[in-house]
Amino acid sequence: MKAFHRLVAAGIVAAAATVPAVAADISGAGSTFAYPIYSKWAEAYKKETGIGVNYQPIGSGDGIMQIQNKEVTFAASDMPLSVVDLDTDGLLQFPTLTAGVVPVVNIDGVKPGDLVLDGSTLARIFLGEIKSWSDAAIRRLNPNVKLPSQAIRVVYRSDGSGTTFVFTDYLGKVSADWRSKVGSTTAVEWPVGIGARGNEGAARGVAAMKGAIGYVEYAYVKQNKLTYARLMNKGGKAVAPTIESFSAAAASANWEGAPGFGVILTNEGGAASWPIAGATFILIHKQPGDPAAADAALKFFNWAYAKGGKMAEELDYVPMPGKVVSAVQRLWAAQIKDASGKPLFVPSK
Image (cartoon, rainbow, N blue to C red):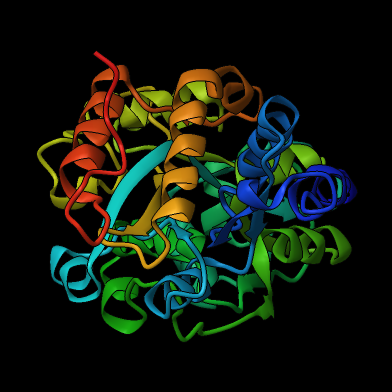
């Protein structure tokens, strides 16, 4: 993760020394799922505008708490909030992009993509029912892979995490036992395993332990050169985590029909779909205490929609479709206002 930390040092946090007081940094916190692309966008935006983005990747749960407490201008969460929760805190929610959550392993002799798992087997591993990589259920899915008699060591997210929400939402859809015994939210009571903080912590934990399995957003797989598993999807096909399979999962989503754009993309149909996909969302106050700061944040995300697509794809995130971006911009104009009722954002004609 050194590259990400260099981005922070170079352009995200330390902008105040070179930017006039009227162009203060934009403050945000939350999702580690989205941190790689927000880092990249922030560096490019700083170069173009001189305005920094002070984004703290503290996990979706803590990010939600900070926006509720008005400690930041925006929060990022990979678990969409309900309309009731949004209305309670006077928040507006919109998606920025989609990507995949990926099971990663550290098994002697197994290379990226060698191992195939299905939802039932993955759930039984994280329930602690399957304890060895040579278990018959895993061998049935991998008849041509040499699997060692190596103990499975589960790594999970110890912090409140949207990545955990996406992962456990998928497990709940494919396993009745998981649904009844553990459930799905940003932080669950894990039956087995070792906790790690953030996507970066989970990636490091899997990389450091022989026999480990964990789950991380795909950019962390690439950054840390981790061994990923392919998954059997709802269509019965073994698929690899790629931007194409993430895009296939998001292709049929009814974004505008979902309250607060709250689409969940797990276990989607289609032969090409990655089964553990999810969106990442921004939360911002409809009537912000600091309208200038909120206006600056909206300008940043509007820039990201217009100019950040290629950067997102380079990290295997899927940019939002143009019609969704237009719907988001209309929502900004209609609902985010200063104390006098004046809209902070006016869409271009």
